[in-house]
Image (cartoon, rainbow, N blue to C red; front, top):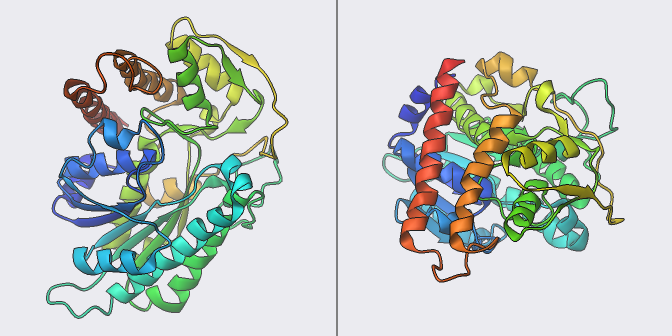
Length: 383
């Protein structure tokens, strides 16, 4: 895939991104604004303090940022009516497995009814009577690799036509989000000419993720605070990948189905088998990149989490001639490069010390994001 042509496609396109204040949403918005897209984001306030959205000044005026709850249909509909998007990328979610055990009702409301609300707004956009506006043409619902009925088998990754039935409230709610989307496609959106795909990505890492209960953010916090890294389960295997891998895959799917609706469907997005590593191996790579860090194992008898999960991404490769760009070592290196900027801010929260997020540091966060995006595009063109 020629990502330079992908960036050219988005120049001037009106793109609505839900969940834009989150980690992955912030990277998405940065890529889109670099491409020259007209971007509108709809989301709650940034979910962490600090947040990539604020550190890198994602909402600095190049993105029309609307703070709102995805469960608030009326407000979301008003944003669709005013912005009139051509493409929609739905990323708003409650994304943490452990949090879903604490707040299952909120998780289902956000991840299921939030998807219903977005699908309904997309549906109604096609009947909007506005001069020069024909409604949404391309819609990508971002779900997760955890939507599958995971038997923790080791002989191969899950394919898109296998049963959906996530175990925990987060995973199950995203399975439901898939089913909601499929129903809207069959009942309304296909006949209205809207190209729709769902994208099931593996675990993402990258600079600017401050979420709790994620291994790389935990590693970064420990490194900045001078503590040993605590690993709950070093033998669990996940399809780890740099955040730019799925971000560009989502944009690729949205573009290609915009131009050819017959390729819309559902797609896995994950690394090659060699980069599906244990959590212990991931942490070893991190400690190699961040000098002086050490780790140890300490279980906490927490709720159920899958021990083994791998995706089969052959469909994405066959349809789009897609290939992963950065291997796991490069992904961790880029994450550490970004995260070491936090040392200049004083502590793991990036807020203490004499310099409380000064403007020149914010500019550096944005510069590193832009440089890594450019490096990713250049590396992709060499494959």
